[in-house]
Image 1 (cartoon, rainbow, N blue to C red):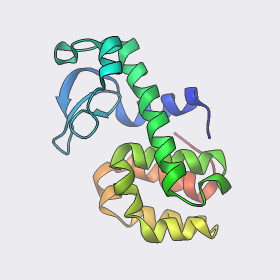
Image 2 (image 1 turned 60 degrees about the horizontal axis):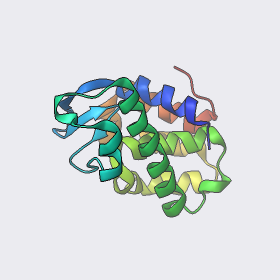
Image 3 (image 1 turned 90 degrees about the horizontal axis):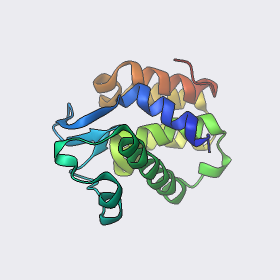
Image 4 (image 1 turned 135 degrees about the vertical axis):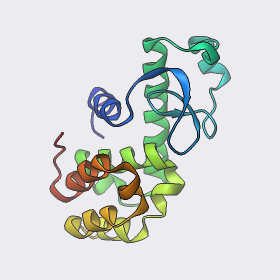
Length: 156
Protein backbone atom coordinates (compact mmCIF):
# COMPACT_ATOMS: atom_id res chain seq x y z
CA UNK A 1 0.00 0.00 0.00
CA UNK A 2 1.07 3.53 -0.68
CA UNK A 3 2.40 5.20 2.43
CA UNK A 4 -0.05 6.84 4.80
CA UNK A 5 1.35 10.35 4.42
CA UNK A 6 0.97 10.23 0.64
CA UNK A 7 -2.58 8.88 0.89
CA UNK A 8 -3.45 11.68 3.32
CA UNK A 9 -2.03 14.35 0.98
CA UNK A 10 -3.89 13.00 -2.03
CA UNK A 11 -7.20 12.60 -0.24
CA UNK A 12 -6.87 16.18 1.00
CA UNK A 13 -6.45 17.29 -2.63
CA UNK A 14 -9.60 15.42 -3.63
CA UNK A 15 -11.75 15.96 -0.55
CA UNK A 16 -10.48 19.18 0.99
CA UNK A 17 -10.40 19.74 4.76
CA UNK A 18 -13.52 21.16 6.41
CA UNK A 19 -13.57 21.46 10.17
CA UNK A 20 -17.27 22.33 10.42
CA UNK A 21 -20.01 19.79 9.56
CA UNK A 22 -21.44 20.27 6.05
CA UNK A 23 -23.58 18.51 3.46
CA UNK A 24 -21.51 17.02 0.64
CA UNK A 25 -22.77 17.29 -2.98
CA UNK A 26 -24.55 13.94 -2.53
CA UNK A 27 -26.39 15.35 0.50
CA UNK A 28 -24.54 13.45 3.25
CA UNK A 29 -23.50 15.05 6.53
CA UNK A 30 -19.70 15.25 6.33
CA UNK A 31 -16.76 16.60 8.33
CA UNK A 32 -12.98 16.68 8.19
CA UNK A 33 -11.47 15.10 5.09
CA UNK A 34 -14.59 13.63 3.51
CA UNK A 35 -15.81 11.72 6.59
CA UNK A 36 -19.40 10.77 5.74
CA UNK A 37 -21.11 10.82 9.12
CA UNK A 38 -24.35 9.32 7.80
CA UNK A 39 -22.77 6.07 6.56
CA UNK A 40 -19.71 6.10 8.82
CA UNK A 41 -20.64 7.70 12.16
CA UNK A 42 -17.98 8.63 14.67
CA UNK A 43 -17.30 5.66 16.97
CA UNK A 44 -17.23 5.84 20.76
CA UNK A 45 -13.43 5.55 20.64
CA UNK A 46 -13.20 8.36 18.12
CA UNK A 47 -15.50 10.56 20.23
CA UNK A 48 -12.86 10.48 22.97
CA UNK A 49 -10.43 12.20 20.60
CA UNK A 50 -12.80 14.28 18.48
CA UNK A 51 -15.22 15.50 21.14
CA UNK A 52 -18.48 17.17 20.18
CA UNK A 53 -18.07 17.38 16.41
CA UNK A 54 -21.39 19.20 15.94
CA UNK A 55 -19.64 22.51 16.60
CA UNK A 56 -16.57 21.69 14.53
CA UNK A 57 -13.34 19.77 15.05
CA UNK A 58 -9.65 20.57 15.12
CA UNK A 59 -7.28 19.80 12.25
CA UNK A 60 -5.67 17.12 14.43
CA UNK A 61 -9.08 15.50 14.92
CA UNK A 62 -9.78 15.65 11.18
CA UNK A 63 -6.52 13.85 10.40
CA UNK A 64 -7.14 11.32 13.18
CA UNK A 65 -10.48 10.45 11.56
CA UNK A 66 -8.83 10.34 8.14
CA UNK A 67 -6.16 7.89 9.30
CA UNK A 68 -8.90 5.66 10.73
CA UNK A 69 -10.88 5.94 7.48
CA UNK A 70 -7.87 5.05 5.34
CA UNK A 71 -7.17 1.97 7.49
CA UNK A 72 -10.83 0.88 7.30
CA UNK A 73 -11.10 1.40 3.53
CA UNK A 74 -7.79 -0.35 2.85
CA UNK A 75 -8.98 -3.33 4.92
CA UNK A 76 -12.26 -3.42 2.95
CA UNK A 77 -10.35 -3.32 -0.34
CA UNK A 78 -8.03 -6.16 0.73
CA UNK A 79 -11.04 -8.24 1.76
CA UNK A 80 -13.21 -7.62 -1.31
CA UNK A 81 -10.78 -7.29 -4.23
CA UNK A 82 -9.14 -10.64 -4.84
CA UNK A 83 -6.25 -9.26 -6.90
CA UNK A 84 -5.52 -6.34 -4.52
CA UNK A 85 -2.13 -7.68 -3.42
CA UNK A 86 -1.05 -8.10 -7.05
CA UNK A 87 -1.44 -4.38 -7.74
CA UNK A 88 1.37 -1.85 -7.45
CA UNK A 89 1.03 0.87 -4.80
CA UNK A 90 -0.32 3.50 -7.19
CA UNK A 91 -3.14 1.33 -8.50
CA UNK A 92 -3.97 0.27 -4.95
CA UNK A 93 -4.17 3.95 -4.09
CA UNK A 94 -6.51 4.59 -7.06
CA UNK A 95 -8.93 1.92 -5.82
CA UNK A 96 -8.60 3.13 -2.23
CA UNK A 97 -9.48 6.66 -3.38
CA UNK A 98 -12.54 5.42 -5.25
CA UNK A 99 -13.65 3.30 -2.27
CA UNK A 100 -13.11 6.29 0.03
CA UNK A 101 -15.33 8.39 -2.22
CA UNK A 102 -17.98 5.81 -3.18
CA UNK A 103 -17.79 3.30 -0.34
CA UNK A 104 -16.62 -0.25 -0.97
CA UNK A 105 -20.07 -1.21 -2.28
CA UNK A 106 -19.90 1.63 -4.79
CA UNK A 107 -16.43 0.62 -5.95
CA UNK A 108 -17.50 -2.99 -6.37
CA UNK A 109 -20.19 -1.84 -8.84
CA UNK A 110 -17.34 -1.12 -11.29
CA UNK A 111 -17.36 -4.75 -12.41
CA UNK A 112 -15.93 -4.15 -15.91
CA UNK A 113 -13.19 -1.84 -14.60
CA UNK A 114 -12.20 -4.31 -11.89
CA UNK A 115 -12.25 -7.21 -14.36
CA UNK A 116 -9.90 -5.30 -16.66
CA UNK A 117 -7.59 -4.50 -13.76
CA UNK A 118 -7.57 -8.13 -12.66
CA UNK A 119 -6.11 -9.16 -16.02
CA UNK A 120 -3.70 -6.22 -16.20
CA UNK A 121 -5.57 -4.29 -18.92
CA UNK A 122 -5.09 -0.93 -17.26
CA UNK A 123 -5.94 1.10 -20.35
CA UNK A 124 -9.30 -0.69 -20.57
CA UNK A 125 -9.85 -0.26 -16.84
CA UNK A 126 -9.16 3.48 -17.11
CA UNK A 127 -11.71 3.78 -19.92
CA UNK A 128 -14.30 1.97 -17.79
CA UNK A 129 -13.55 4.32 -14.88
CA UNK A 130 -14.19 7.35 -17.10
CA UNK A 131 -17.32 5.84 -18.64
CA UNK A 132 -19.35 6.27 -15.45
CA UNK A 133 -21.61 8.52 -13.43
CA UNK A 134 -18.74 8.71 -10.93
CA UNK A 135 -16.52 10.35 -13.56
CA UNK A 136 -19.26 12.77 -14.56
CA UNK A 137 -19.87 13.64 -10.88
CA UNK A 138 -16.27 14.17 -9.74
CA UNK A 139 -14.60 15.37 -12.95
CA UNK A 140 -10.86 16.03 -12.47
CA UNK A 141 -10.65 13.57 -9.59
CA UNK A 142 -11.85 10.74 -11.83
CA UNK A 143 -9.48 11.86 -14.59
CA UNK A 144 -6.53 11.67 -12.15
CA UNK A 145 -7.66 8.28 -10.82
CA UNK A 146 -8.16 6.87 -14.33
CA UNK A 147 -4.72 8.14 -15.37
CA UNK A 148 -3.22 6.53 -12.26
CA UNK A 149 -4.94 3.24 -13.14
CA UNK A 150 -3.71 3.44 -16.72
CA UNK A 151 -0.10 4.54 -16.11
CA UNK A 152 0.68 3.53 -12.52
CA UNK A 153 1.61 7.16 -11.82
CA UNK A 154 -0.32 9.82 -9.88
CA UNK A 155 -0.11 13.25 -11.48
CA UNK A 156 -1.77 16.30 -9.91
